[in-house]
Length: 190
Image (cartoon, helix red, strand yellow):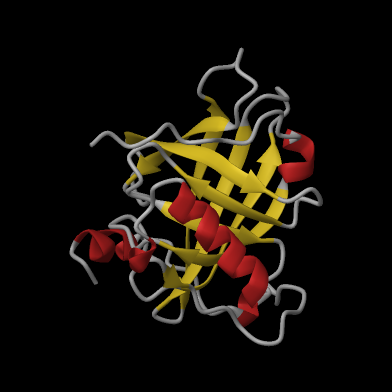
C-alpha cells in the first residue's frame, strides 16, 4: 500500500524560523551520536536572503560536537516548506557533500515548536525554542506524525539539561571535539 502524500507547512516565514531550536525527540540516525544530549540547531539567514546557515550541536562523551551546513528551498518557486540541507563530511576533512531533506510538517503560529520530517519517513524531529516541551504539545506533535504515516515507536526523547536557562558559555559545556571523532563513532553505531 502506498503511503499518502505528506502535508507540509506552506508560506513558512523564514526570518521567524531563524534562531536556536532544541531537539526534544527524534528518530535515531547513523549521522547523530547515539549518546548525544542537549542537542540543538541554530539557523541563521545568509546574506543572500535565501539560504540558511545550519549549526547542529550536541554533547557526546562530555564534548560539544558540531557540524555546519547550508539549507535551501528544494524548489524556490514553491510555497511549501521543503528544504534541502547540505553538510560536508567527515567534519574533520569536509570533502564529501551529503544532502538530505528537511520538511517542516508543522509549526505553531508563534514559531515555538515544530515537527520536521521527510518523504521516506526515515527521519523525524520534534523541535522547540525551549529545552523542554509541555507533554500535551509533545503528544499533539506525535499525533501529527502518526497522521503523516510515521511509526512513532522509533521516536526517542533527547535529554536536555534542567532547568532551561540561557546557554552556558562554551568553556562550561566541555571541550569541543575538533577532530570529528564523534562522526566516525556514529557510523560504527557508538
